[in-house]
Image (cartoon, rainbow, N blue to C red; front, side):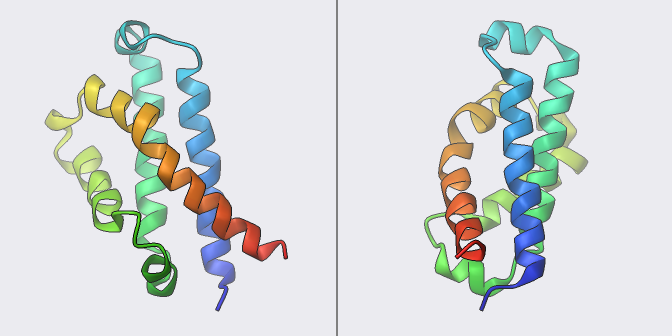
Length: 115
């Protein structure tokens, strides 16, 4: 069953995946790491993605076992509470590598609402 709550959360996730990519743009890792503004903005986008994922229905998460939903959820706890572990490398890798699989799932699930 499709939930309007899921739809809103997926839209938030889609938007913030886009923001993270926009913030990084064509920057190299070195440029990213040197820019506090880009680092903080990208971290915030990832935090919102994590928080939105916490509220997705269990039904949706069960349908999408290719995503490690616990890791997505727990990343937000690191961003908020264990900030000493939030490094430029971690944020860069998440934003430039790990988001692709999540984005694909988000877009596929959103497409179901448009049918």
